[in-house]
Image (cartoon, rainbow, N blue to C red):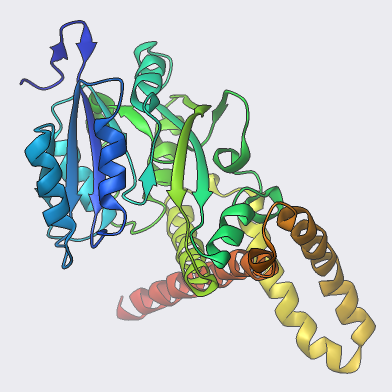
Length: 337
């Protein structure tokens, strides 16, 4: 089939699933894709040299549905996987789906209907966390809280609107190639950076909550902290490339970490001053925890405050670590010069 070829009156869609060692979730992901009510698909599972049974599972599914095939990704990082799939895509549209996610049967059709209007360069939907463990259920609930994720529309939005970023977006293949695809130097936040470049070039991005993504969140607090530490560190890399992409909400976690760190030595001599610094966040954390825990069982509720803290502290610490690394790199380069 030629690149971008229409199947009758319908456009071929390339669905891309970056994966590495995803034996626990990859089959459910692919099953949700082959069940789409838009059947004109090619599904590229871009495998980063998996060491578990991921490839065996994909191979088993592909034997019953030839639309599914594997693309190898020796670099083992997501932006390289996405660019490899972009190079091989035969469709007119490209939709990324995470290996930890499942989507409803109308997901592809709704995304394509928006793209076919020609008004949008990217379309995405609501990313709803799914918890399996008590901590995972708490994390999923926290991820839908404004106190937890701030202004990230795709975590809690309920109306169709233009946005600055969409998760696991759907895009025109021709436009992605013209933009050079995803930045391979960004191990995280590469999707946000792509969306920023699209908007900087005058394109619009659309959020539609009907495009629901059931995404398996981290299932323990330590893993959540590590995830958000990577996000915070990656935000610095994007900000250095595109300073205007930085928003006040991105600075809230690093400022919180700085304030809490400053309050510790202050508390030794001026406890009231330290309380004035840390008190507002502690109060906000308590209120948000009570509200968020309301819909959870008793075992999951106890993890809610820790999940909020892991997200905020992880992002803030990661941001400062990324800033320190960037400054150190510039100092070393100047020294060599």
